Image (tube, rainbow, N blue to C red; front, side):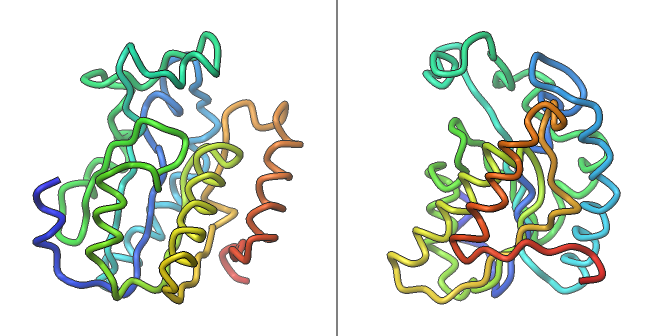
Length: 198
């Protein structure tokens, strides 16, 4: 994205992962229960804006040719230029404001998005990351651990906080073992799992 190089320098960042219609309101992978975490996300977004943090909206966006669909059978979702790949209505008002940027990804890890990597490479003063969004056991865990590994490789000191009261996944009751495993893996990698009031 051409605007990445023109951003001011930030020390803290809030990453909002895949709060798009394709996981919340429509499509084969959506689950309306994910809406329950939106109020907490809005609190964190407003807090980030007040503190002048960089806010990054990650938007899962695929084409019909995305090879991810071969691994996860019958899960064609979040196709580009469809409502599924756009932010949920509750968060749209925050998308095009000062200190915010939207980045599309075509994998289960935001760290693999060329635009996100370019952003991280250009923001060398970033040391603290807060992460919210969905899906806990796929895109949140993969992105968070990928980010930690990248920053370790670059010898960049960092703190990563995943807000447990602002993450969710589809069919969460059925996928509880995966969600629990994802949280355990993130903790094991030195990622902080935090909640409001703790």
